[in-house]
Length: 496
Image: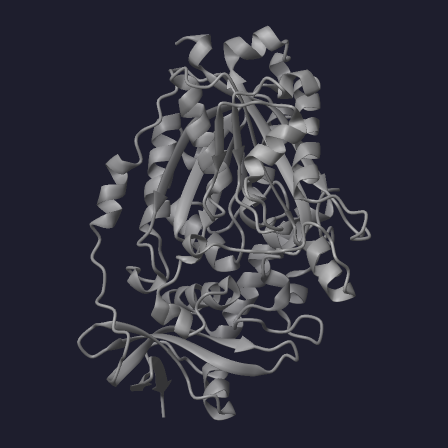
């Protein structure tokens, strides 16, 4: 095993910008440059070291439009990397970038890499509400970046994550045989420890410890968003946060004079995706891809769940955490916290870049606990794209060799997909659902994923009258039979 080809993390930097006048707030490029500067300072290589990077990876961000954000950042850093990469949309991107960069280092294709990302949607939102014009205030998505949903999903309001993740949650509740009230208690118990970690993190957007009951009891300030989720258990994307990680080889770290106390190794990693569209999924209470990513990551590291001392499980919504716990075989009752940051609803869900903060915080945690191991998981779109990494200050016992994800992706792709019907008519039953609430706390839209009698699957909305919505909120809807009709590409499911 050669030091020239052993990848290692040597520096991390994080920035949180709060309560700043939009006219003087730093934009996305400046925020990433600051996170990079802090990472270089952490590694001890300074601005001169940043100028020598030969790989610059940037996680795609939503905070404004730039023709070439990677080149713009490189110019701001005074760097001239031959390898410049902008990821696609997805919260899995930071961990995937680390995995790919480690592989490039192990193959001798990269000498020194900076990986970073950002969101400044808090400042953009504040500027828009105040009528203030700022140079980075345009938020755009290309058509390519919007392809996480089928047209029939979009037609039935299944694009916003706050509408989709609650549908997984209701499926989990039904699978586990819980009443709606009992399951709300479980959601609160799951996320209350996240708030405790966030309360102790000076970089957290909401550093406030809350009780389980406080998180899930609906109120004027904690309304339901997509049932059964109250506002306090939803990821918060309107933040100003940036994080950066610097990677190199062990040999190059020595040449740069980086102290060994800074070195954090990637022992195992994997990347996979579930069936791409939500309507294609095997079911809504499991994830074959997370199961496979866990298996491959632990196998590469030669570790088991029992060997992991620290976790950061992707926590955009409670359903994502519960499915990850299930597929990774984590204990139902956890003595170890499931986050080192505080999680996306409390630390802050910096768009696609949250996991860069997870990795930076995990590195800090492991440096303070030499020889311990940490697991970071990442999730993109709607429990769709997944990545994981096992880290430690302990040097690996074997050469880094990342397994080609295509070799195990094929087994996930082989899982059968249901037939999807865009214009559904006939007798049907509910597979899962949610009820969307307005800012006034009132329910206004029922979203259903259902099955026709032949087993084909469809998306639908329910009639908007309060009788149906109240029934979805108070009764057991999953498995309930009714009739679906279609008109003009809109499906309507009526249980009456």
